[in-house]
Length: 308
Image (cartoon, rainbow, N blue to C red):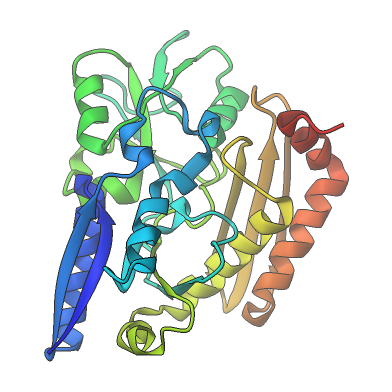
């Protein structure tokens, strides 16, 4: 019997995602065994420093990729928003699953919405993308860094350290905590992160045998949306150090892509959008990035990255 080994982070959400993929693999391929290899990555260990200062979201995948290179795992399961714009040489995105809820969630024990927060309220999030967009509509808020797994973040909220916290709605729903979502933040207020809500299966490039087992996971609509979003991010050379949002959806058979680049304080947000054919997803993303750059995003990126 063939055994597929899935490399995954040990956090509760990551394990849920890996188990979710495992269950579908077993249902689709009854002749295959599936085992999980749980790991703690640098991103899970270094919790006292904002991600933007220690290398970004790639810290969540390096150790998993090392397990694959060593032959200990054939695939890895990720929240797709944790994948950098360009994967290291030798790796490929083998499958993109149907997207779950892409929006940001407003979580509070006292207030129902972002607008209901009192002046100077303390809000927890470590996402520069969320911070900049929140400050654009509520510059009075005190935004404090909040890292750790979902349960850690919820505990800090419940201890009274924050008036509200902002999390990905998909994570709360996957962890069977939808009741903790007081309200969803519309994309017009907080444009989601690139690929937010989608799961990706990473494989070694050229591993046709493993690829054949996971082809059934690919969701064509989600692939089209994610392709546009990631193309925009890649053309911007986007990373964790700068607030970038990108969100595509299908409307009447056409792709609608929105994107933004924001200054860290939220006072300057460059927005744009494209509508077009699904087949043009990558070109749309690249084209939107060029427009954003020409309209001021380049100056924001240069300032953040310290480029002359």
